[in-house]
Length: 147
Image 1: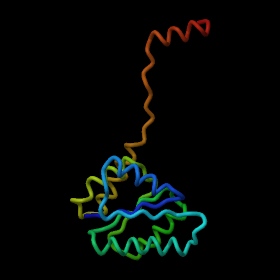
Image 2 (image 1 turned 180 degrees about the horizontal axis):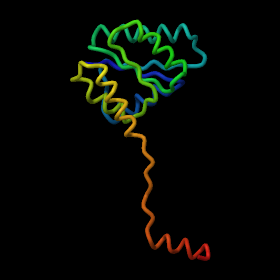
Image 3 (image 1 turned 135 degrees about the horizontal axis):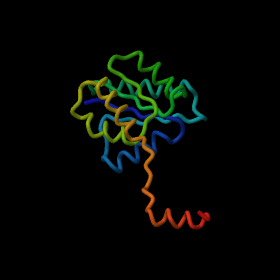
Image 4 (image 1 turned 90 degrees about the horizontal axis):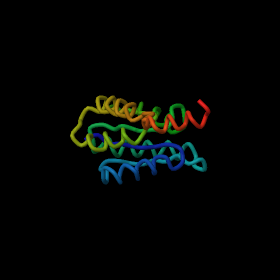
């Protein structure tokens, strides 16, 4: 099994985890490490480090999901992850990727492959759908515009 850590600014990690739990159920070997403005960087670094160490003892690897590339949670995760083997960091986390990995990580032992899968699913989850315009509505709009 691959362990997961979700981190980000403010309530990001907590909100994402609540949504994940609502859809995919409780998550085993999963930790939430929020970064709050009022907390010291040292405390946050310590919290991330402890979470990685704890999960590495009980899993085949760890993926750390962060909110924003270049932000403190991302930079801290990258620095802490560099001290371990089989720890991957992903930034730009979204709910589709957490659901996919939350459901599939139980049977996975390849943390790098799972990280790649998470990114692919996350990219597919970003869409810009539109409802089709009904022809009658379009004609009525044109009449109102004087066309």
